[in-house]
Image (tube, rainbow, N blue to C red; front, side, top):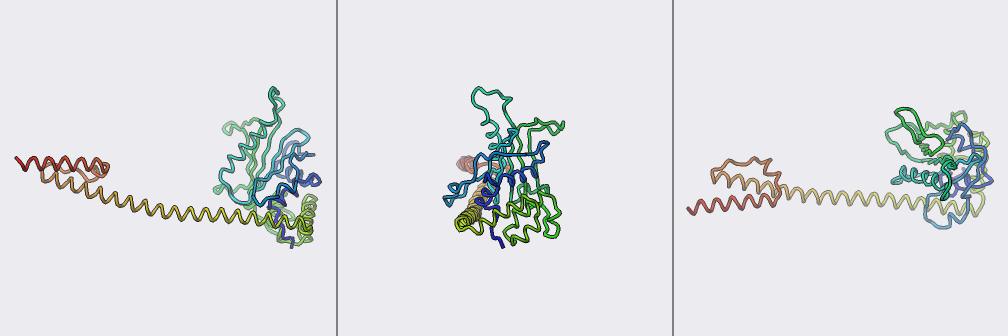
Length: 311
């Protein structure tokens, strides 16, 4: 068994961010984007470096590239849910688009900017579609601004994956299978299931990581960092839920006490009104008043009652 997960940041960046593996990246890009002009060659702007993984902190590690047509491409892997992900993707692709120009440059120089986010979890819970493409478009009139910005999200867990049929499945389903299950297979069996040349090369990279002491140590370190980050996230969430329950109970007690006091004041007002021979106010109308307003009403009625008794 390979025991190496392609979704770990170190592995992902080494497979798709190493210049010597550029054909693997091109294969994945073309599988997802399905552009009229396929990606033929790319220059990796931020190539793989061991220094990126020197600390035990998790950071957003992406692969940024530019192809021969001038298109700017970004691809990243997100295993766990993160707050504000869609907004961050939009911000990043807009930044990538705007950063192409220097002061004084003509806007015609702008080339398409495309961001791809691969997801190991569900993002759109009410939608069964695994791959979404967002662009600047007018859906009412089926018109869009071409060659500008795009954001793609690919939710791997929404694909129906089976070992029995994966060798004949679509390329995107095969990539989903690779990312989610590659660590569970022996290399030979995985090569049988995924015969495409990009997969064969990607499996070779994983084999190297599994066999090379330095890479294996780095992988173990990054896997631990991811596990610790997930534990901290879950702990914070559980702690937040517990605090929320306690706070809710305290608020409930406070609200219940206030409601009881208001009820008592309202009944006191009705009793004083009856003693004065006035028409009693309705309970709902009294409960709409604040505690201060009820207190003023009680004081006024008590003063009226004292004045009448003194006559």
